Length: 304
Image 1 (tube, rainbow, N blue to C red):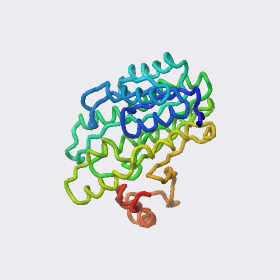
Image 2 (tube, rainbow, N blue to C red; image 1 turned 90 degrees about the vertical axis):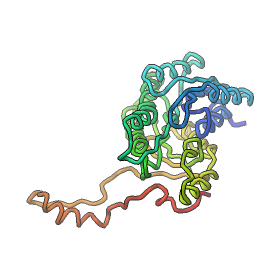
Image 3 (tube, rainbow, N blue to C red; image 1 turned 30 degrees about the horizontal axis):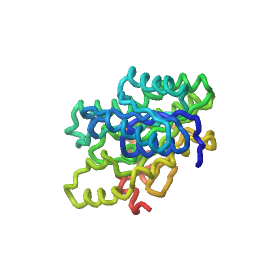
Image 4 (cartoon, helix red, strand yellow; image 1 turned 30 degrees about the vertical axis):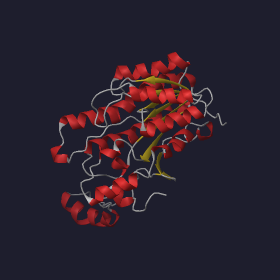
């Protein structure tokens, strides 16, 4: 059996089900010691339940792997540091953090409450920062380490009623790139994955019209375990030169996303006025404008 992660220690947040569970189990099958972290809350962030994390850890051990369950929140500075410390205390080191934990509170923008905004940003953006920041000194000291952050095409492209989630997930992309830049001297790499998978969170999409019903039926074919090979691949020594990138995984497709770069310029020797911007700069750039796409407008082919 392939033991390419033998002796490595991996924390996977939000690993009590869905994408996180798949990553945790595949990493364990490759020999990693896994901290299965999951608060056990609802897809919208309420409540807590130790059961999901413990179930996954028990199943890993039943299959001959090594794992512990952890139910602390990623969304608090102190508890994130305690999650990292639990890996050090139990296994003696830490090699990879997979920032997968997330919540959704989909609300059309003009009706979005401060609570809707706060809880989504706390889990989906503060969480990855707190976890990564807690792990960083350990990675620096050992001059190695790997971060895998889960982002979303809701941020990379756009989706309706997800301003909170989209903003947080785009923040994760900026966070990952900054980590990659700041920690490259210590051989620490940081990458993002935008997953396409049917999970508890995706299951919250209401089947209230034909479009959503079609989305749900297609999504159900994209099982969470399809994300794990890319995530675990990024942990391997053979990927040690891969950093600062944004990937996507959609059924049997693996994609590399572009990062923002200038695509058109306009200049004038006389300097710009508001009027000349409107009369000259914008018309020159208009052919290169992006439409108001949603993720489903860009991915028009069925997953395969």
